[in-house]
Length: 233
Image (cartoon, rainbow, N blue to C red; front, side):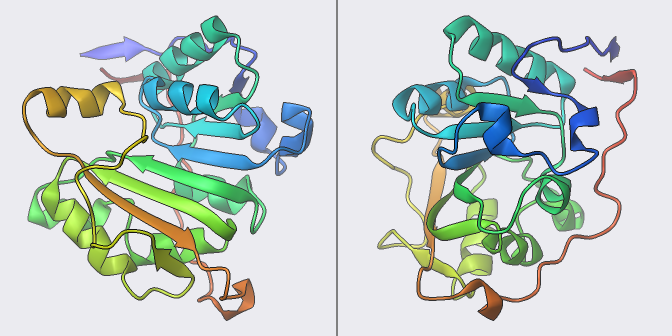
């Protein structure tokens, strides 16, 4: 079943045209507060909670699905929050085109597509190349949170990031199934209600490793998503 894409008219939505040149986020938000990014905002439950908790932080919430961006914007509009902007862009493209190095104070990656079939796992967003690239955009001391409902994905990411230059594990284990104070999205709650675990990984950008000592960022070609007027529901 296909569904016609509904135009998003929210003042908190950043349209494609605004990425023709790198956005000046301080101008978009009207201040120079710390900038955080949620990759895969779904329908906005997580970013809404986090933005309320951290009113002095500006949040960019991105997703590749029009419906999710539309619903996230509706939540933000209804809340009256002025510290969230939503964009329908792919994460790797955003890093390459929409952000400056060392510009992010936090990144949240909540339950991305796990691509559970073994032959598809190379499609997972979070891998070594992505983590090495992301390190360039995190300020020294910035937070990186990753969560998944798929234990194999947690183990994969834990193995990829362990010992990677520029990151420091903030947990005593590779991952945890409890992270006090971390907002629970509607998607996460669905699994928790079934008695299934959510796996959390929490690292910081290591302040002792300067950016020029990090591996060069790698952004593969082909990650600019061309939106169509219809998408799968």
